[in-house]
Length: 193
Image 1 (cartoon, helix red, strand yellow):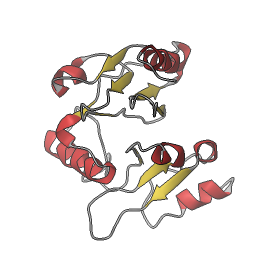
Image 2 (tube, helix red, strand yellow):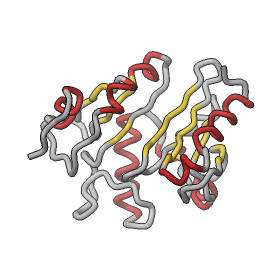
Image 3 (tube, rainbow, N blue to C red):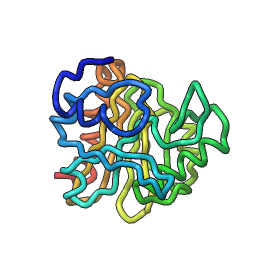
Image 4 (cartoon, one colour):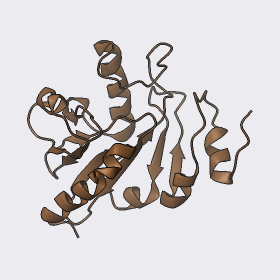
């Protein structure tokens, strides 16, 4: 059994759900994550929610691997785009229900541990074919943006003045390539404060 290093880790680890691996609680203290548990009456997965982003009015969520339909060894909330498309669609639908977006407007990219950024617009398949580790959603378009992570870090940037958000896939190579700075500069160039 793992030895929890701090209270936030304990709160996350002691969910009434099977966790495939423990989560690092240090990021939870920094951004004040709240656990939104899975309802027994719905098929929505539990999410980690940033208090700061929620209070600023941004619908968002950080998922774990709990609450989806994918079989082992990828159980259960697997978002890999190269596996079963029907299971991926159901996992996207569950995430969309939990966060509150239209799954038909979810944009992702081909993540390559680089410093490219793409703005979500138009065809989702075209966005998915682009190599980028940061995606931006413009306000009013209804688009949702997401990144997939395993041992990398998901970074969600939001500006309450413009309403723009950026989802960033920050692995060590992307961090060295300054992908987070690329996303911040893009938001600033678009009027972020």
